[in-house]
Every structure is written in C-alpha cells, then in structure tokens.
Amino acid sequence: MSESSVKEETKGRLTTRTVAMPGDTNPAGDIFGGWVLSQMDIAAGICAGQRAQSRVVTVEIDRMSFIRPVKVGDILGVYTCVIKVGRSSMEILVEAWVRRNRIGTREKVTEGVFKFVAIGEDGKSTPVPAEADLPDYVHEWVDGCGI
Image 1: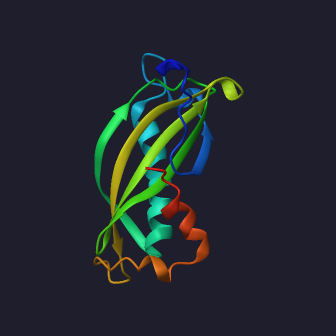
Image 2: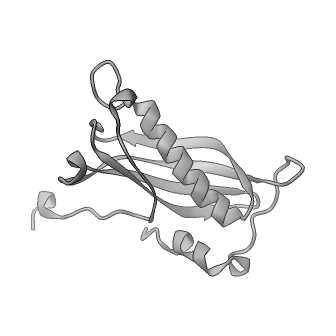
C-alpha cells in the first residue's frame, strides 16, 4: 500500500466546528492564519477547561504547523485531546481539519500543541485534578488522542 493511499485519521475529539467566511480572508484570498489559530485556541481552551475543571489561560503554543490553506466556504473542524498534565498545566494536541466547500474532501490543514495553566478564583495557578476525580464526560478528551 502506498503512503499516499493511507487515509490519515483525526486525533482527539471534535471540539468546535465553523464555516470560513469571506470576512476572514487575507490579501491573497485564503483564510487568514490568525483566524485559524484563534479557532484552535478556542477549542484547546474548551478541552483544557474541561480537564482542569476550572478557568484556564493559554501560556504557550508549540510546534505549530500550517499544512494547507483554508478557503472560503470550508467547514473548519477542530479536534483536541490532552497529551500531558502537570501540577497546574496541560498540553493539548490540536488538529484543524476542513471539509472543502462544505461537502468535499476532508483534509488536515493545521496542527499544534497548546499549553494551558489552570487558574483558581484568586487568579493564581491551581492544581489540575487527578484523572480519577474527573466526571465521566471528560475522559473522552483524555483517552481520545490515539498517540
């Protein structure tokens, strides 16, 4: 089987989905990379907040790769999963995929690792709960990476 015939699968759970609109384009007519990054940060924040069971803040974006452009009319789906948990921090794997022209080919367009810190009511870092203490619905993000 050739490498090109192997179908790539998403890692993680579908966290957000939106349509790329004309107002989100750069001067070349493609969707602005900052808009895609913003959608990924929103999805990663949802994932991290569920895992932390608290407010979270983005502290770092690592290994960001823009693979293919996003076009007007593409449906952008952002998949997330937790890949590492520290005392108060988490690393979230984020993949952005598009469905071309709303119904066409599905392609991975961007991926990266986002680091978050859990924040308590006092605005300071707070410990992330142990996995055993999490509600059942959170385990889909923890167990869904496939890496």
